[in-house]
Amino acid sequence: MTVGESWVFMDGNERGDGALSVAPDEAVAELGRRIARGSFESWLAGSSGRLLAVVTNAERAMVVLLAGEGDPGEHATDPGAEGRSDGFVLANGQGDEYPDEDTVPLDEALRIVRHILATGGPPADAAWTVDR
Image (cartoon, one colour):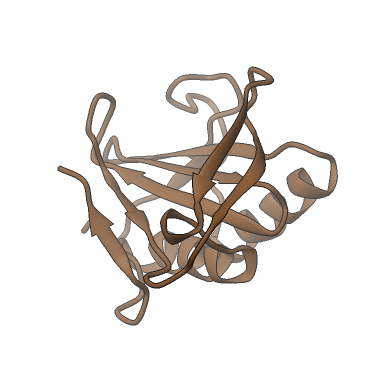
């Protein structure tokens, strides 16, 4: 966990170089705007080299935190959720489907993202799986 880390949206720039850092509330507002425009995959780069991905279908979202490129990472989960959801459209146009237990409702995803950006890690009450 890295407290005091700054975050930028990557937007095709692999490290977000030259981008202005965003505060947690600003980042969540921007994610909402992106989703409203139909942009369902967003990446943020942390000043420590960590990466945060949010992929959504506008109802559920996969939130993945990586220590850096190539890291298997860790992600938000919804234990006990049943079924699968589709409509997770990546920036390259690929449509994905995920088990609901590996995604969370969008409002929970945004809460988790806000907390990670503010404190360096997910909320203590959020279900979280380390994939390393």
